Image 1 (cartoon, rainbow, N blue to C red):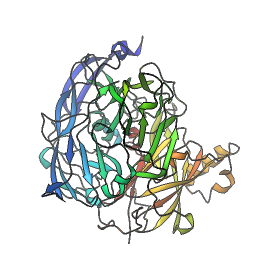
Image 2 (cartoon, helix red, strand yellow):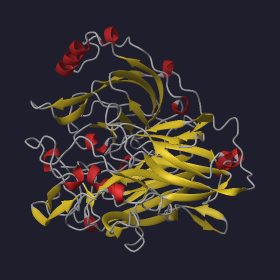
Image 3 (cartoon, helix red, strand yellow):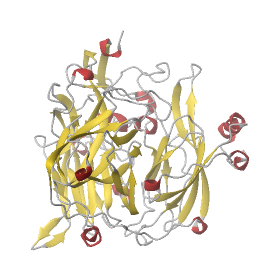
Image 4 (cartoon, rainbow, N blue to C red):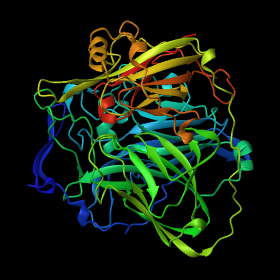
Length: 573
């Protein structure tokens, strides 16, 4: 029996209250015609006011709504949770927030969601659970550098109308200072144990921070037509158009619903499955965000066209990097320029060949190996943009200035049936006492030891980092080292220096700048230099980073983060 023929009985419930039990037949996405829907440009919201030509701070009201969304012309409307200024204007992804350096943006995120979830959820992975019903949500601005109370702590959740709030909730309005380096961010739900289902339901959107004085001289493509976010993720659907998520866990005796990774059959860009975009023969800028739960993408163009990488995550590179392919893990962002005047063909497909799970999973198929199509016009267009030889230089990063070295180990735990049950960082659950306490204004070296078979994208809230070195653990004696680490979680006691002497892998050229996410290869020790101050000035923050509820760091495979590959991060003075 093929996967598409399986009938699944799904019970959607919340706090014991059943919303509905129904038979869901998985839709065969290969029946959908590719490249039939035009690529949407999500609504734009200015995170500032203009008063007589002078930019001023503003306050936005953005809600989370239960609505329907068309992911493909031939799919029935899909029930989703969506961000927007009203239910009628809510979209998946949500509106793109355009912010300006130095101009504060205030957002009141309002939860208008129903009392039940539209997806199965697993109560055994300790999700946020309100006493009086409702769906907990909280918004994290990924890549943002701002006060702890506005960071979207997983325990700072709230339900519809702020009727109930989590133990670390502090206030209704988030304050984004916008005093960091210009670049790309995205906002998404971050509620404890529910991040994976809330994002799958649609709660995500782009946030762009611009600095006109610095960026205008670069002469990169500008304007809404030529400078566009591309938010990419994968989804599966039922025949009724609903988002399909397996309701049975791979280890149901431990977790009745949780699975270690979610992979969808269809590739979605800006809310449409395999969309198309007609482009002129000139340069375009694309800010590509991988908003998948677990899928890695290795992007390339079917006709060999180049990517010119100008930024990675939330920061510019010091100089452009030309490449034929880009590997992007969940939550990573790459900022690229593509010159379609050099396209040798009139149509070009943005494709993907990353195995799933990455790196040793299944090869891509016809559906998940294609992302979107560009249709290139015949006529050449006037193009005033240029790619400068230098972009933005930030103060240098030197490990000799680090005040502390930490070892961060990643573990996966399995049951007797050799199925995963949970994942920990440093052998500790999320609610164990905080162990990472960096001092504000300092640099630290983190040695990240990946003892699992998966590639884990590590995301650090507040701190940005540079990757210094990637060193393989020796295979000889590796099981002995793993056993020692599992028992003691002490890299020094377990003689890390004896084992971290394998092959060194160079950092990819376009990933040598400042990052807030990086791919931790399995069986490797990855050394990173983490900075807890602004990277563009080395200056201190305009807020107190030591306040509650603090920050976190975690794997950004959402299914791992929720169970429980996340730890608190407490900044001290």
